Image (tube, rainbow, N blue to C red):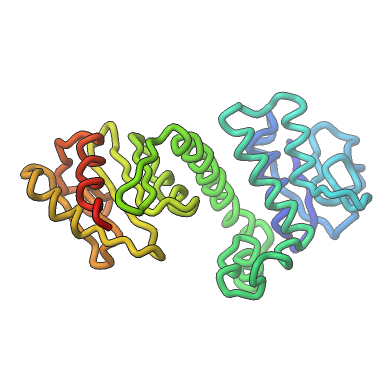
Length: 281
């Protein structure tokens, strides 16, 4: 039987390193997880002495870091081992590296230097949610079972973000009046949010499969999408367009309302309408 051993009262590093072993180390996908007091051994098995037993974040073995003051953590050590032995798929490697670097920062309490570090928004971070779970879950195993799907979700989010970064670089940048805009033909919804965070005033995305178009404006900029909406519905008598009350979102498709009909207008035509609608702004 394969075993993964980590310390009791698990923290994010212990959980992430355990997840990495179960998820990516061949033969350990069904491994049993055992919890020991920090820096003690399970049934007198020394770390790194048995190929069927892997210690993480405890025991002073190859996947622990408490024997050094280096800028590392157990999750980072497991990742580097997986990377070195070419056990990661290329589609996962970059996202995993970014994930474990955040875990490493949290393990070294670097969130204390984040902007406005006492703000409530940071209590939505996984590391903080974990602390809340400790007061609700009876066992470390129950906590791990709750956090593993969150790590899977974060991995997928970072993958989407990496793909979005690439799509944004390929996008068409244009001016509509005084506003800096970006247009893309892609399926990744993350591109819109990321492009707005990067400073674009307006972002338009056309789904090349479903043909829906989504136009969003930065919430802090003085952008009103009403003129674009008015001109679109004059030209497009097929597609369903919805202008959000904020005047910052103009949607031709939404997972929240699958009945909306896609527009027959090309992305280039939508760009022309955006330019002409805002040319005097």
